[in-house]
Length: 88
Image (cartoon, rainbow, N blue to C red; front, side):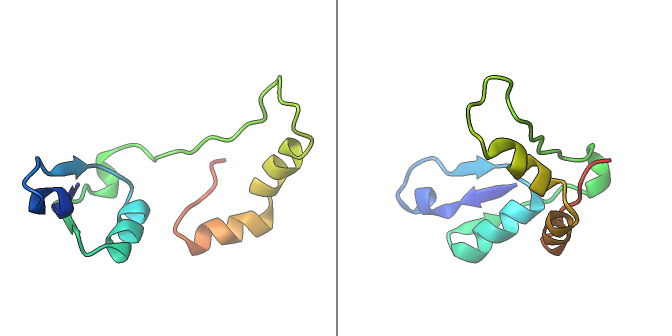
């Protein structure tokens, strides 16, 4: 849980947001106007998943290649470096 203190400084209602640990780390690093209020233990919820698929009606010739890349060992190493894993 994070609070955007910039809105608070303007006298408006502060904005509260729940996001992934990785997103929170990135946001907090980029702005001193974000305050971490609370964190949820990883065991308190099911894994967060970011599905990827090529849509049946897609006319993008690179879509299947991109999906194959996302499933590759190279992508797996990149994901792991940033704290993510691949399902299955």
